[in-house]
Image 1: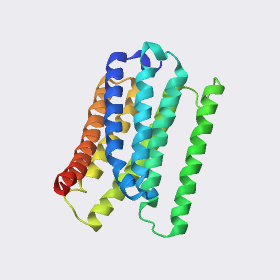
Image 2: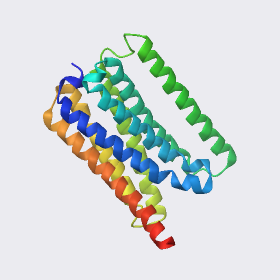
Image 3: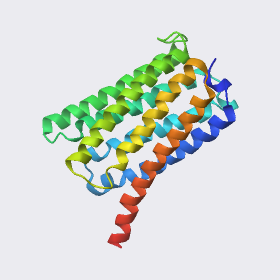
Image 4: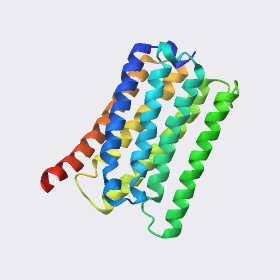
Length: 226
């Protein structure tokens, strides 16, 4: 049974709201790149942009207009790619040598090629690599949790290295996103309603933290500059 069969109205509302928040975050996060034109500032806005796209397509997949299981595969793959992309961004964030930066750009380009290949495969071949969509969800959610856990550790290290009350919120945002992905594993295993609700609540808490951090970082700076 696909996820569209359960709580479709609630899913549409939550996915649309999640997509809107992500695109607002992209609007905030792209500003450093606009000011400096440095590629290292593109990682976060692109990562949250992919995440927002996955939420937008999820809303379409759960609606009557998107009665096609392949849209769910698209959503699942893009969302996993978003978390892998963010983890890769943080992995190369602290590297300052040109060779490391070049390796980071090549890795990200390779990830995009892999994503495009997987999406093409999902749309062309009726039977995908996994036995079922629900089973694929379990495996990829585990990968998502792994990627988010890496980001949590990485951001905590950055905060410990340079303690700042502002930076401590970032790992908490990723912690809640990781919890959201973890609880969804149980939802796809036994259709637990409590896991479903828990995943939505923790997702919105995580996104709300990022929105708070972005607003305080950029809007407060604008007020000071003004």
